[in-house]
Image 1 (cartoon, rainbow, N blue to C red):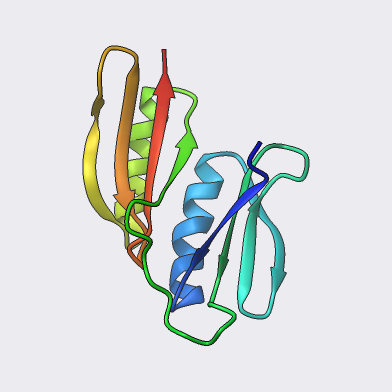
Image 2: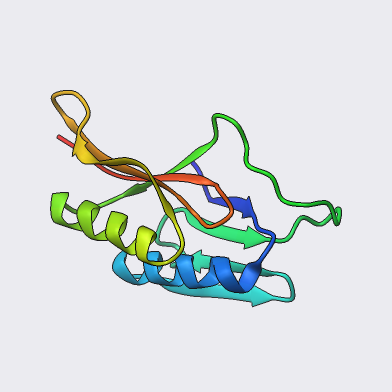
Length: 122
């Protein structure tokens, strides 16, 4: 259903380092670049993430209640993604662990404050 998600940034170079590292752990890379924006994903391989400076020229801000969920292959990858996020300018918004009986996740924010998580179900 979702083709891609776009998030705003105020520092594309700083944010690109964060998303390059996250994408590499997820087995993907940059698929498109143009001045002021980058997109990560695999064409035809599911939803991707785009990062851009806002087109209206205003500062990028965080959406309250907005979160991008990244599906991981296992708990070990969730832990790695959380560590990668923190090592690349992200902040912890909830350490890896169970959230109920069938959901395991870690929550973090990118360098601009956008909220993401890495999760598995089952």
